[in-house]
Length: 612
Image (cartoon, rainbow, N blue to C red; front, side, top):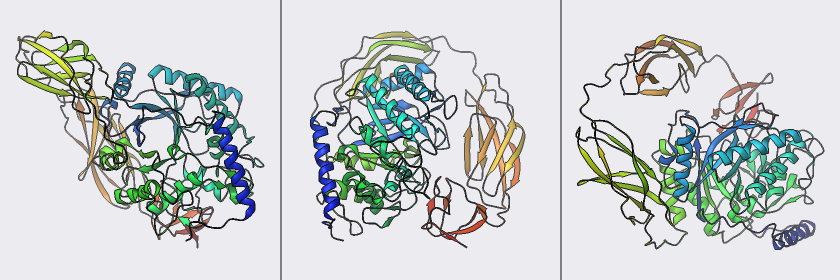
């Protein structure tokens, strides 16, 4: 396909006028790039789960150091979808410990951002009262925990366009207008140079706007392209846009061809739309202007469990070669540039937790790729000396130390605790020194180290005497979970419930095992997904306590439901070619593999489903 494709004189004139307008806008200072140099020019962003969904819980301080930005997900509505009030409670943390871990990451040069919304956190700011509630509650959360900024991850039905709201530059739909006002108010409160504003919409809300725009079409979904007026109105304060290139149906690119997720072709086509700009609903008189390359980040799943559209390392880097180096694909030729954008911002992933689950393939592989664009940093400056070294607690064989974080020009990566001839490496500002001798004095010092291996001077020495020998320890296991039953089941899932176990020091959680699989939960219920229809499974539930003692198991046998006839279509389900579903009284056959999304109902996407 010819890269220098021909346009009519009218669209060309509109594009030139748009470019001139943006140049004047930038010259005035309103559109100038933001000076947030603390984040690497080639940025790696990851979402951190404030919950445990089977990917595994990770303390913030244990996040892979490969990430520059950690998006804490999610803050969610605390008083209903339309009230606007947002709440946030750290999962598996005290407030004090969570704040300490945020500060620890920031001491390493990382940015920690609160993300609002997600699949379960719909927010509709339909009134000015809701807008004000949103501004006040979000500001309070950011100030309480010391977050560096705000990520807007509105999904589902949070954003939509009223019929007739066809001008993206002058929107009239209240949920759009009030969100724009709220974001500008929050940004103004914290100050542009210190505050990060990012967005993570789905392709449905951005690139689909090239084909359909919710406020100007009669039969399409009113949410189509609904993020576009928000992006346009905040482009002067927007640090980057990280569209979710996953869980998406086929999207039409600037070549007017469908592009399917999971390939370099898809990622280049989606990014190219943002880098070149595009006529909304193919209306040359309504042109969405291009974003700066440093405002564009590719959003990707970390592994196949994280979402539909997982893309191999090789395919992702093939896409980056096209976007950053100009190595064009045979299947898609970029409209925005034939030589690439060396200042393209980087990558985002859902998620940090799934990345760890997948042995850090995403962060290790792509950090190395992105670093190849940045010159090496020559650093001889040592971190500051750790201060306030104290023994937070001790026993006959253990001393728990803590100290105040050091600072460094390239970021502190860890600490070295020394005592006698022994050393202990710690990643955070605390360390449990075990294997000590009872009733013995030890002298501890702590040094900080940075990414280049520089060590600080030693802290002031701390002398601690271990306690006398203990006469015993906890070896009492919890009682076995009682009354394990299957409270619900489908063809592919079983929900188990049981009576809580008891223990002398308290039960900390339960483990459900079946075959070679296991699921850890903190409560007395668990839903096991991904099962096979009409199949017998034996589940065993055990309890564990704080000392690591595990109870005997309680068993239950459950046979999943039969898969009789077409299943009802549902969002967030992975479908393969040939799958049969029912929707609105009709039967459809899947034409392309995909993970379903609200808005991609079979009747709306003939590229995905064939009616029978």
